[in-house]
Length: 216
Image 1 (tube, helix red, strand yellow):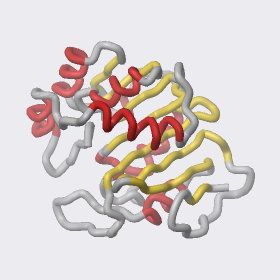
Image 2 (cartoon, rainbow, N blue to C red):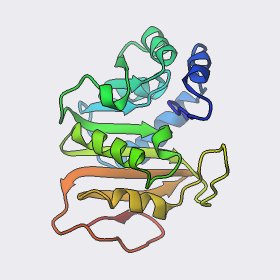
Image 3 (cartoon, helix red, strand yellow):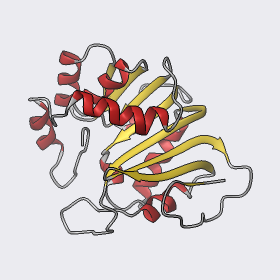
């Protein structure tokens, strides 16, 4: 996944990897997949301001820009950001971590994290919860944070490998916030969203449903 930074390998691995552009994708496959599973699913509109977190070498940030969004991308890999700036000129790119983002709070209508390493491991870990809390601060009222993560839902946690988290793992993660959220799965990808819309009632554990459990 673009932007994935596996701490087992380290930033130096990804700096070298991104010198040649990183992961390779089919432009039209990615376009239609994200149009169906991101734009239509969350009713996003052209002209919205969008931030991609862990954007890697910028492929998808550029793709979102071509869809009509006003885009920024961040990544902690200097080589990834250098590639993005050289090859994809529409968005604005920044080399930084979540804690270093050069934006005002409530700046974005949409924030997207695809394959971000914060969400490939223990979703109950404080670092993962802090990452989501930080991201939420940069959403406009009514904005949406969309998390897209490859998983087979098996729950496997092999040493040295990314975790195959279940939908319940994602539900429990998002249920830590007093905001509306949704969790779904399609084509081998968990598709989750945290909406910057407060819950009308005290946050409680959600019923365990097979698909698209929406906090109410």
